[in-house]
Image 1 (cartoon, rainbow, N blue to C red):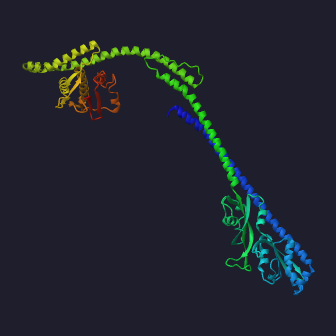
Image 2: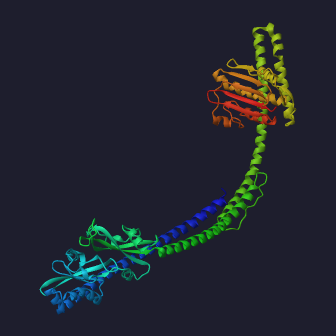
Image 3: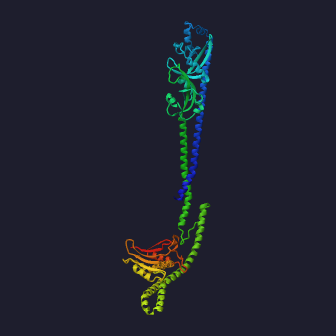
Length: 585
């Protein structure tokens, strides 16, 4: 990846990372505050609803107390209760109905000490019906008020009922009255149209410990009974229960339906709220945050692109100038009047270029001197290689002259080709070095013949065995015979030097021409080389022999390149070395 792209990505990450963190933080904080305000508002509404219910209960108590005072002053009612005469019974039967309308109650009935109904606000024929459990259950209800199922001519209703008592004509009487929990009543409890109040009853015995309090009921998830509330109100799934206010309920005992068999149970005023407003606020916040992020990303991209261009443009210019530097052309100038880091780098490169110009002059002078010395060492090396066979032949002839003088002529005739070949080799070297550089004379060379000549001229040593493994197909290649001979002489000499300490063998082999070309191979059973040694084996003046010049393999590499041949080496410690010179078909 280019430096400019990396700088661009880094700047985008640096710019967008904090912006994203701020956006997420702002979104989270706004949502938290909105949710907290929503919860506080719901809690406040639940508290007000509880106060309204308590106020309604107190209103019922006041109306019953007023009715009790009125009854105490009504002599005709007193007479009807005391004498129970049939003539006064109509007044008694109609009293509750008239009193109910005057006091604004939704239900009213007067009972005697035995629980018999003396007067009912809705039904005259309920006279003398026994309902002793209702007053006692109302008295035991927390706060003295409870939801009660009542019958009317229009159908059953639910009321918030309370109980009061008085003595009239020496008889204890009980007054039970209440206000209907109707739709208008529930709407009055929730003047805010976003909230709704629903009455839900459970067939669970009243227990203050398990009854949910308003604080416990405040949640954004529907609570137990919320489905009933939603069904009763016909609400959409977009409403959530925010509170459930427990309220005593006097209903029929489980398994029965008679109003005379009642028990104290539990009811709840379920408060629901539409989450549409909060959802709209959240969507609005999300849109603003997304818009701000989009604008921030666009600005960051543009800014990062501009900054990356400002950073990469001068570096690209420096790279272009640097590309023109080489040792033959050091006239590139990096002078700059910039005062930033790029200017420092330009001035540093300019100083480096000046130093390179001075160093290049010194290097050229040193190369000239080194070339002369290198040429002298190469001549010495090649001459030594040419003199070695002559020295061996002369030593052999001297040995024969001392031990078998009669065979001197035959041995001389046998070894004369070696002397002639070596002299011719030295003569060719002399002519070659006289011209310093001569063009290659490519001709058909038989690799088998070249291998035999190299083996015949190899340095004789009792510790080394030089063998041939030649291909019968007589591989022919186009090469300069002198150059090929120099390659073989250097490879064989190095192989012999490698195997002398181990008394090994050196094998010169050939491989006939095929689709991959012809090859000549020099293999030895010496100690081999490590990878590090092989990497340096073909460097100039790199030798492990006390009297070596370090030019043998270096010359082989250069001469192989001159012939456009390939050079491959296989070696490993303890496995010897195989050097292969390949020629293209």
